[in-house]
Amino acid sequence: VPETQEGVDFDEMGVCTACRSSEEKMHIDWVVREQKLRTILEDARKKAGNNYDCVLPISGGKDSFYQAHVLTNVYGLKPLAVTFSHNWFSETGYYNLQRLLEVFDLDHLQFTPARGLVNRLARKSLGAIGDSCWHCHSGVGAFPMQVATRFRIPLLVWGESVSENDGRATYDCPVTTFDRDYFTKVSARLTADEMVGDDLTAKDLQPFQLPSYEEIDDTGVWG
Image (cartoon, rainbow, N blue to C red; front, side, top):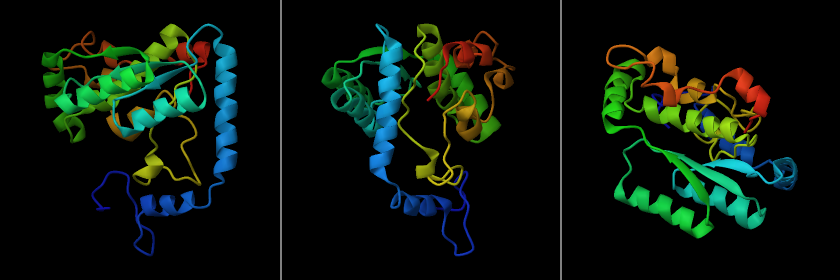
């Protein structure tokens, strides 16, 4: 792992935190972890009643396929799949997403921002945070949370952990919940309000606004 990767740290032995985190995985009691997961999912199913059991944010990649397999085939849940499209899908990426929906027979909501808006956001993002994908980082958090609060589905089942990639969390000191501000803290770095200006209006940025703390508390959204 290069020292220029965001969030990475090296210990006195020159070993990066992601590698140390990987070592911690060898000592996890996966039976206990599975029992905890089962309890969470069974509780979500009981509370859901006739509603969807959980929100499943997906892109169509390998993590998405595994999430869908575990939730539907292993635990028998009925998730509502949601996708924030960055409007840069490759032909293969779009095929993979459609294939996932077909294989697991999922109900699905997708939001795709206008290409002109994406272009303006990408241009501003490059100078603001150092890469052109602020709308990707922000949208993948905001849209699933918007769906969860509006449909009143408390549980979101995410498919990745920063413990796999860098030093912002480890398996011994995990990020316990993907809270309201998680994606702002670990990737987007700027809120939608902070992106307003130049040729970007508050109305343009509305799709990237996170639900309020009150809305999240009212629905009990967590992940």
